[in-house]
Image 1: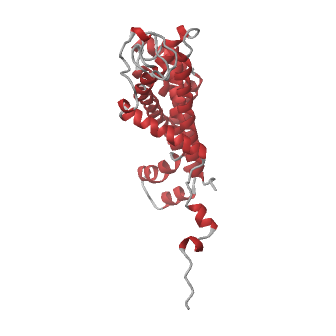
Image 2 (image 1 turned 180 degrees about the horizontal axis):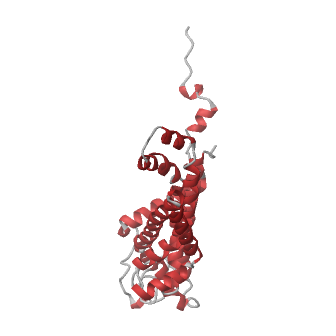
Image 3 (image 1 turned 90 degrees about the vertical axis):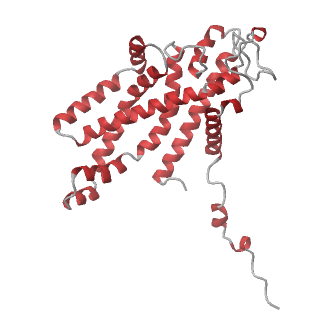
Length: 289
């Protein structure tokens, strides 16, 4: 009689079986679920929202959380859960827009501070230092007084406010990479300066900015909410998260849900982006075992 051949499950080693497991830890998995929900709320908010976010119902004014309204209602009887869901698109747009603007400014300033001549480097470094010391809230007040409150003002204020920190990272990476052996070899081979910049320096110097940008989205959302809480954000009745906080602060003693639920959403979203960003950074650095 011939012996039966072992099944594939029996021949696989413990390491192979572990390799087929879900590749993300529980915290990262939870963060990814939050981001998927945010994506759905951004693309098709009506799929998740039970009510029209702008529908006024004076018979349900300041209704506490219930089965009909899980997050309660506001002063006009509008469902708070629906307003939070529909406000996802605008809140994320502010976060992504501010980070994109900050990255563009950071790359321009960081590369100028790391590769230009001595005079250009000194000017770029002084500009980074001055802007780094300038509070984002004061910048928001200045831009709001000039352009008025709104999403564009928040994007510019936050983007310009966080750009100096990003520029310092880019400058440090450029100073490190430009002296790398492969850059010296490309220079010795006679490659042009633009080719060395775009083919060797930029890809390696800007790689950490992927993680920084992911972490910065959550930070930008928190900044936008803080500025909106001071009345510098989107004007009502827009359901942007910071605007919801600003609208609910007057009634916090009688309608706590108007502050608690938007605040919790902002914290959870910021934690989700931070968790994914840290995991991505660890993966890029090869520290995940």
